[in-house]
Image (cartoon, rainbow, N blue to C red; front, side, top):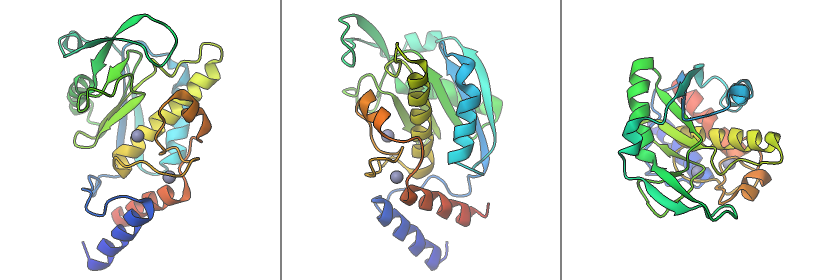
Amino acid sequence: MSKYRNEQEILVKRALGLPVNQKTYIKNLYPCNLGIFFIGKISTSILEKLKIQIELVFHSFFFDIKFFGEKKVETCLYNTHTKVEYNLLDETTEEVVLFPTNGFYSIMKTHMVIERTVIGLGLTNVPIYSSSDEKLLFLFGEANLKHKCAIVSTHNLVDLNKSETTELRLIKEVIHEIGHIILGLEHCFNENCVMQFSANTKEIDRKSNHLCEKCKLYLENIRTRSNF
Ligand SMILES: [Zn+2]
Ligand SMILES: [Zn+2]
C-alpha cells in the first residue's frame, strides 16, 4: 500500500472514530458474492425487499446475493453450549433456549465453502447469545470479521401488531451486520445511521436503514482502493 493510500485510510478511520490500528479484513475482497442462509423458520416474503436494500446501501460490493433455503436448526446447534433464560426484552415470564453465535458461524462456514460465497449472513428465528461475551443475551445480531459472516435473529425483532415494523427492523439489522463485516466492529455515533448500536427495538425503530455520510465515505474509500 502506498504511503498516500495509507494516510487516506487513517484519515477515513479518524473521521469514523475507528482506531487507526484496527485490523482491516477487507483488502481486495470486494466485489464478491453474498450468501444468505436460513437457519430455522424464516418467512421468505421479505427476501426481495432485503435484496433491494442491501444492493442500495452496499451498491457494487456484491456480484450476486444468493438465498439458500431453509435449513433446520441442526443437531449440532443443540449440542452447543445452550442457555435457558427468561426473555428480558419482552414482558413474558417464559423461559427460552438461547443458542451461541459461534454455533451459527461454524454452520455457515461449512455452507459458505460448499456454495462458494465469500460473505455469509445467517437468518434465524431462535434467540441467540454472544459466544465471545456470554453476558450478551438475546442479541439482534452479531458479526464475525474473521470468518466474514454474521447472524441475525428475528426472535426479539417481531412486532406482533405490525408485520411492516418487523420487516423494517430485520432489514436494518441485516444492513447493520453486513456493515460490520465491511467496516469493522466499531459503531457509528450518528443517531440516524444504521451503524449506530441499538440496545432495544425502540432504538432500532428510531434509526434509518441507511448509512450516514461518514460511513458512506468509508465505503467509497474501499471502492477506490479496490478499483470497483
Ligand atoms: Zn453492531
Ligand atoms: Zn454512520
